[in-house]
Amino acid sequence: MEKLKYALFTGCTAKESTPEQMMATLAVANKLGIELVELTEASCCGASHLQDYDDFLSLVLNARNIAYAEKHGLTMVTICNTCQLNTAMTKHRLDHNAELKAKVNAKLSEVGLEYKGTSQITHFLYAIIDDFGLDKIKEMVVKPLSQFNIAPFYGCHNIRPSELQNETHKGHENPYKPTSLDDLIIACGGASVDYEEKNKCCGFHAELQAPRTAAILTGNAVAGAMDANADWMVTPCPLCHLKLDTQTHHASVAIGREVSLPVLHMQQMVGLALGCTSAELGLNHHVTKVNFV
Amino acid sequence: MDTIKSKQVTFKVFRFNEETDYLPYYNTYTLDVTHEEVVLDILNRIKWDHDGSLSYRRSCRHGICGVCSIKANGKGILACKTRLFDLVETFGSEITLEPLSIKRAIKDLIIDKKDFWDKHAQVQPFLVSDIEEHPAQEHLVSPHDAEKLLEADYCIQCGACHYSCPALAINEEFIGPAAFAAAYRFSADVRDEASLERLHVVNEEAQGVWDCVKCMECAEVCPKEVNPIEKITKLHNMVFEANIAKNNVATRHAVGFAHSIEKHGLLDEGELVRYSEGNIGVLKHVPVALKMFAKGKIVLPWNMPKADKLDEIKKLVKSSSTVKF
Ligand code: SF4
Ligand code: SF4
Ligand code: SF4
Ligand code: SF4
Ligand code: FES
Image (cartoon, rainbow over all chains, first blue to last red; front, side, top):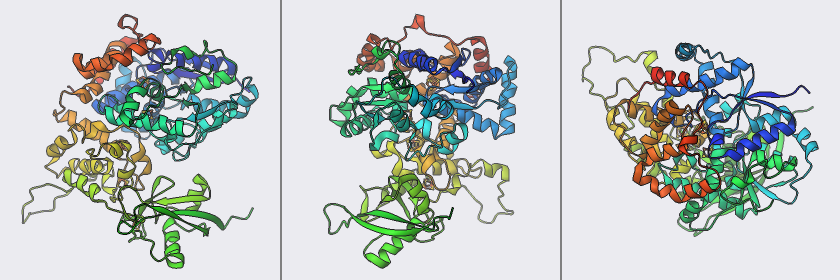
């Protein structure tokens, strides 16, 4: 197989509050022989909030990020669900609206760039499942996670709205019964746990504005995973990770029950199965201690 | 290969009668279903062949009246539009049929939708316009102006989004996706004169657009592709454009992204929280911040990473900004 190569849009979180996610992404890409060209020029995608304030500015900035991936002639790979949604949504809107695309390009031309629409955008989860292949991952597993019940937490912005998501990656994932992360858990040798909240929202985006709502959603998710006998949770989204890993105290108070589970980034889980060390995967950067390695 | 004409499906149907039952229960029926049958056909068959007391709403049978919406394995659907074979493809051959809201069940699949209509009433879901009694000519809306509604007028008030919204399930004050879509539908109408009043309603904390958690479920579940979250984003924009955005944690949180991007290209996470919450409000985040700091999860201001070619980003933020706060 030809070596897989992507333009990596890291987003901000991987550079700030989830450094372990960046480490694990690079470690796993290295193990799998996937080449990642980091888009160091990229700006923040606006995290689904900038567009509430200034939709056009959000479009221009996201189009600029994609334009850099296009310059490399590569598919853009994201490692944050919300980055994925914002970037894919921008692409969808520009590719389906010539007038808007022209308006955005008029701005980009001020800095010598153009959005063409030539790069695809996919999340790293789908890059390794669809492009690299689960079977190949399975073959490479050296330390299967066979002792663990693992609760997948998909995060909204990778699975909804499915019409958009399935256009930009080959997930063909049904948001009411997503399977990708479950399949990945199984490929890594673990047992995937079914629970009601696995495709629900963790509340991250309303954490400051609606703290009670956000805390209850997180509490419900962790409680759901605990009640289904999960040893730990896994998520493809650093924002979900932040919420589930660092906010369980508020969540416990909000739902009136002590809840807490270790939460791994999807890359960390794959990395463990592939034999990466916990230092390479940054497992010491978690607030909720990863107590099993 | 022959196309499969029928499949055996087990239905678990929610039963409850407010007048005689303390607790709900489920009845199970195993039926052969054909590829053209929709959920409503099954409900009819159960009622006609097995249990005449099963209650559910239906009227148009064409996805127009919106009364037949229920949940199948947790997914909001129109019973008259949803083919069984599609459900089986997603969920397998065990299908659980429940009312849109178990909390609001009156009899079996029928719920009391009062809260849904109350939320609508809050946003004046009608055209407010001073129209002459004897106009000299028609009041025409150009196709271009009609497009501004973004098909929000396709809503059939089925309630599928409303009863799937996680923000609303927790925060009863929240107006919810369907009523927000209605607020947008009439406020975006060129003939309407109550836009500002509606924007004030959706701009309130707790009930307004700021409490949406952006889960995208309303866009996913809507059988009419109304895409309520898109309208919610529009309402946010209209609040800023109308210059009625309050200076609070929610608005500063949205605006803070623009500031941060202009300065670093990237989001300064710590500064966003401080700017949004204010110097006092930020204190409540200190305990978690300390724990995060201990784990190397907080970047100190002087180590804040910056995007390459920051000059480009700064220039674009200046030239492409369309609103002020
Ligand atoms: S969603 Fe978050 S991580 Fe992704 S670019 Fe935006 S702020 Fe950064
Ligand atoms: S908070 Fe997590 S689960 Fe909710 S929308 Fe964001 S990524 Fe999705
Ligand atoms: S996106 Fe917002 S309004 Fe829509 S269902 Fe989710 S929380 Fe509710
Ligand atoms: S927006 Fe869609 S899902 Fe919500 S009430 Fe209207 S038609 Fe039903
Ligand atoms: S019966 Fe009218 S929409 Fe289903």
